[in-house]
Image (cartoon, rainbow, N blue to C red; front, side):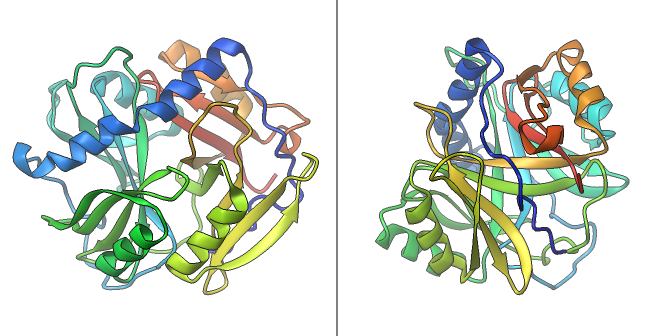
Length: 309
């Protein structure tokens, strides 16, 4: 799958309102909740399924191949994503189901993890899994570059080798090698994951770090924001992720997942009715109105984009 996702796009992102901007900041500041969950995952005996329905034995290193959502609001988020994107869910119907598998047209694409951690603000976050050839080696490199290891590499039953880390700028993600191989590398359908974008405090340093981490190729593109560039990371001729200077003041660096949609406008009109929030509404000045940033009922942010636009 080759997607030059941000070519000639306007990246001058501005929040829709101060309150929505505040919610987005909260989303980015609560990564420690996910860290706590993953660290204690084995102790809680939470069983997660493989990332593929059947073994593929193939890998797409440098691609974000899986996404897990931590939330206390399992029924609300299932309703939200089900009605918005047509996602399907497998797991017990209890609102305290430990793990709910997300499927799209029968294909596994992610999961919802229940957590009842008490916190002052009920927010959550999508956690992105980056496919790498050697989790232990990647973890050691990350440490040597000033990154943080929140959980040393371990074998997560059914899933594979994982390590929970933050890059040198503080963006949380998972280093991952699936025990059964990565999901097939096909062009995303409408309703599937489209892209992964790093909003970072130092885009030049982040590009340098990730190029060494996964041996990415790099293309720099101009954006509408003065002296700000968009960086596309590719691996084996396939565009895999984007990096851009974080436009939100006071917001920590974070990986933001994108979902492909036919048109963001009608979906944005449904977001608040489903209990979510619109952080950035479609705007012709921003990527020709093809993109929006929303939060689900638990506060987890996700971007939606029409592609191609």
